[in-house]
Length: 440
Ligand code: XLS
Ligand code: CA
Ligand code: CA
Image (tube, rainbow, N blue to C red):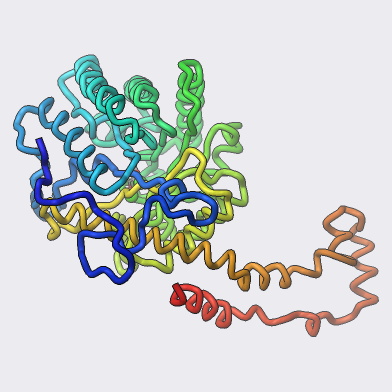
């Protein structure tokens, strides 16, 4: 069955095309910065928003029908697979990301939920065998939806809930391995607190680390070779999420000796909720060797919550892809559209417009980032700005040759140094960036 019969394969028509159902910038096989665009961008469809999200919000029920013409939960789950593969095909998206419960819902018992999940993953394996261009970027467990997780999963005050979450994660890891997943994500769901008056923060964090250690050890024991990611988010649903931002997560990983097992899945909208730029979070991850994957979306700067919008801000995608290229590109990670069409954009066609908008914004971002690097003005400026560290006292500090006493002697002899400083030239660099962006 064809779910989107009146939409054909979306083609690249170039920047002068006015066809809304065509790519203007994403040309999958074009080489940019040494790789094809599809290898550089590794786009992924998010099962939860695209296949399941019907626009429900706290003020109203869904506006989009995501039952895919079926009534029975197992049939809906299978139809979702067929429809997802058709969307991926038509948009030239190779990867998908999922929560266990997006693939197959929760049934009466864990055993039954597991059995039904197997039916769907068996079905997906068959389809992926027939079409090896469809791959799993990452999987995860939905340990935040059911009432049992009201106080958290790995950080729940209840040991029974911790055990239940562990069992659910074990199964989600198995499903990810079965689907050949490149990654497994921990997003902190309800791992946080509402008030410290009822919270043993120390025990909760120790337990979270215990859960992660067990998950990694188990996955490796069954032959999983992909990455593990933590996806930082500062707030929502809890007032304070433990995985606040990249820096907080790094401190957590290092405290518990998990820093070699995890990388970051950085989401644009979560970065801005933490009052950082997206680029800041990417840079921090890159500088600390933990850059892994990206949830590509954007928030609304006037709202304080996670709006998960399809990304269209090219300035942001360019700075993002600049960080990705500087990090050496994606290895196991990619660009997952953890994004949903607005509630009013409820038609099947809107799925395509949303992805085209997001993919083109990132394709353009990649083209600009490549140009920023080959143009060289920005990199050269930064290099020159730090030139005092290459020779003389700067080189001696870096090589560890000088002591505090030596520096005192040097400073006393040198006198005031303010005149040796040069301008930061922020406005000039922002103008260079605009010049590069609009010369494409
Ligand atoms: C929620 C998160 C979530 C994760 C996967 O804000 O972005 O969608 O990516 O659990
Ligand atoms: Ca996300
Ligand atoms: Ca999000």
